[in-house]
Each structure stands twice: as structure tokens, then as C-alpha cells.
Image (spheres, rainbow, N blue to C red):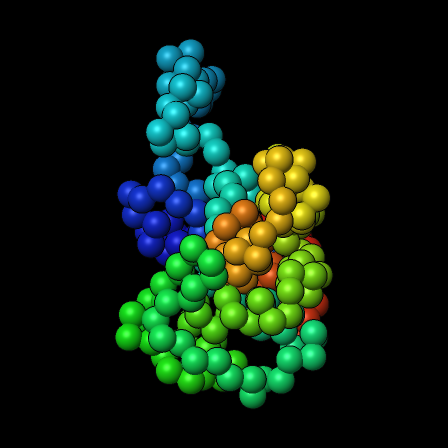
Length: 225
């Protein structure tokens, strides 16, 4: 816990470490936080007001279970799993020239020169946006949605802490209802690389990655023994 809090420094963010074998939370930190010593023997009105009105730092927000963020490239292994379950060969190749183009949408890869022709293993190792965006177009959104759901995205982990956020694992119906917009192919590609409408909590992501580490079991995270 001390090591994690030190690593967080003075930045706004969250960190969580769990045992992938049983879901035990080994460390959890949300910054910026507040000094518990200031609340003994009671919380002064001025301090309580400051904690509740600080809209920039939001110290009362437990970002590990309440904050939701785009997972970015950490989601790509789940897109890869979706492709494999949909029947795509790990030897399937695509040529990355540095940018994925879909209509008027242009999504750049971190390697602006392109990764050239690569297969799934290389695409994961190189975190190639172009490869996974194209894979998403090949398999469609349904396998990605199903795989993400099995990994625990879009629902609460069941951690023994209050006010957990379920995150957002969007569906075409959700987008139509919430945004009054139809689902577009670009949505599928954006989500395949952990961007777009997809949002997860840090704890959700830790649980999902734990399943990759332990052979596929979704553990229930817990603070208490």
C-alpha cells in the first residue's frame, strides 16, 4: 500500500493491485485524497465543505471503483480473444501503414511509419491500432461485446465496498437511447482499441486482466478476508 501511494505521487489517478488467484486486494489508492487525522474527533464544518466543493481535485471520489475511464490499449487483448472466438486465425495478417481509415475517420497508430504486415502476436506486442481496428471490421461488434461482457466489463465487480460504478459497455441500443444516434462502424473500431464509448473502472480492468493471468476465471475482488 505504501509503495502504491508513493508511486501515485501528487497526480490525480487511481491504482489497484489484486491477487489474480483469489481476488484479494493487496493495495488500493485514489489520489488526491484527504487526511483522516483532520476528522478526529469530528469533521470540522469548514473541512467537510471544502472536501465536497472541490470540483477539480474531487478528493471524496474513490477513483478505483467510482471513476470510469477509457481503457485504451489495455483492452486490445480482449479484442484479440473476440477475434479468436469468432474463428479468426492468429495467423491472420493485416498491413499497417500508420493510419486506419474508415470513411472520413482517420485513427493513427503510435508508429506513424506503420508496422507493415503483421499477425496477431506481433499486433499485441506492438499495440498496433490499425490491426485491431481492421480486425473489428472483419468480425463485427457482436463478438467484442460478448467477450467484454464475459470479462466483467459493463457490470459491478461485487467488491465489498460501497458506491461501486458499473462502467459503460455500450450496445447499439444503449447508444440510440442515450445519444439518439445509430451505431456506426467507427464505434466498433474505436472500442476495439479501448476508446470511444467504452469506459471502465480501474478495479474492473484489474479483474479482467486477472482472468487473463489465471486461465480465465473472473474473481470477485475483496478487501476483507
